[in-house]
Amino acid sequence: MMTGATAVFMKTLRDFASIKILGLYLLPYTAIATIIAFVLSDGMPDNIGSLHLHAQEQHLAEAFVQVAFVWGAGLPAMVLVAVLTGTAIAREQQKGTLQILLSKPVSRWGVLLGKFSAIVVFTSLMVWTGLLTAGTALFVTSNASSAAVPGGIFTFLPGIIAYAVLLIVTLTAFGTAIAIISGRLLWTVLGTLVVPAGFFAFMFIRLLAPQGLYEDFYLYIVDINYHLGQLFVALHDMLGITLSPSIQQSLDTFIGVFDTTVSEFDPLVGGMATSVPLAGYVPLFVSVGILVVIGLVSFTLALYRFETMDIQ
Image 1 (cartoon, rainbow, N blue to C red):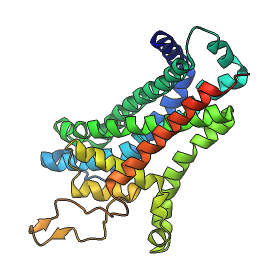
Image 2: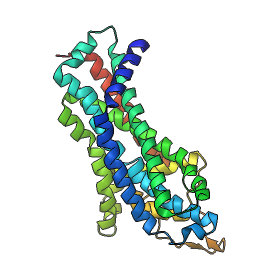
Image 3: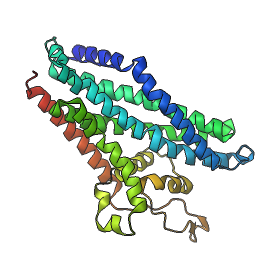
Image 4: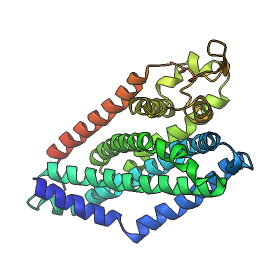
């Protein structure tokens, strides 16, 4: 079984690593990442390179965490998963090539595992490449000292990469379930794109909704963006990576996890508070649990359906 799964994995990975797919993803990604980096850098002090090293690190970190959550490990990765699950599974079922594949000496479990793993690995590699691209663009456009890069960018990479991998695994499981159940490329892509659409839409819903509407109607329960933000924060906490108050406040525009209405000055410590309190709509572990359950249920459903379905 593992030999068959490995063969499917390698074949699917080679299909993904075409010049067409790489170009369609990386070229617009790099261009937009550079524009975002330029915009964020424009908000930094003009003389950032002459500031104290810690101040440079903080400015870089604020900008990098923002671009990493929204763009580096955010919308492009979600869209890529939607496209790959559709092309790797649903399109093959539509074209009839999946039936040919299942006639080979490989189990259905091996086929599903091989394709699932290929999507996760390829998307993760694209995210890692994208994060380095975004970090490089941010460093170049900011004119910060190279000494600020380790503390301003590299320190946050483990938490961001862990978040990206868990997001990719969960979304791939969700997309795989849709692909196998629907058997249609269009339905798979559209169904999986519900996640990035909700991710993007809820940023504006929280900002533009009348005061109290978000809380009174419990919109945070279905706020994809909020739950992913909770996962992002929880993983950084688990890895011991500190998000300073300034980073928390700059990031909160996109995730709504923190209560930024509180005063920045804490009289108990005689200065800036050590952390911005969580909004606390639901505990961190609840959001993490929801995402884990969605991934497990989706993969189990996909496996069961794939094992029992008739391939025409």
